[in-house]
Amino acid sequence: MKFGIAIFPSKSVQDEANSYRKRYDPHYSLIPPHITLKTPFEAEEELIKELSTELRYIAKDTKPFTVYINKVSSFAPVTNTIYFKVEPIQSLIDLNSHMHEGIFPAQGKHSFVPHITIAQNLTDDEFSDVFSSLRMKKIQFQDKVDRFHLLYQLENGSWTVYDSFVLGN
Image 1 (cartoon, rainbow, N blue to C red):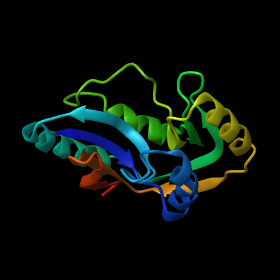
Image 2 (image 1 turned 45 degrees about the vertical axis):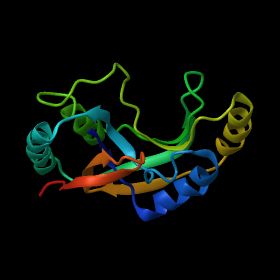
Image 3 (image 1 turned 135 degrees about the vertical axis):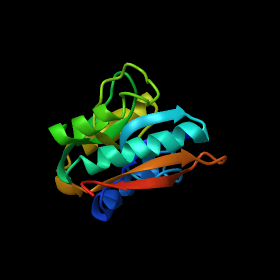
Image 4 (image 1 turned 120 degrees about the vertical axis):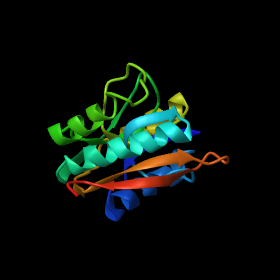
């Protein structure tokens, strides 16, 4: 089964992200706006039980923190993905690092770029038009992070919460 780990931002951030995702993100109906802590990985139920225990320890040792979302950016020219940039504060970097150590399945070599995707899989022309208008928008949010979620993918491609982990608890 495929799993992932993510933070869901507050309703106000999700509403703002979804105002763009409805039009520009084909994954809009599959998962709410999120900050990915660990990209999708395959795991059996036995490993997930162990990972859940480890995630509880990580959550307990991590104090709630505030993230700052302050502009629209993109992964161009690598992909035509547009996102809300989440400032890479140390608490967020540490949380991500813990999910790539020990018993966690290894993953690719991409460095951690905290973000909330608002558009993806755009043609070059669409990307150029959409990004040139969105990067001029003033985006500014502060959002308190007090939990993260272990997600799993359903047969229809959508994602749902397997377990939630409250920080500092």
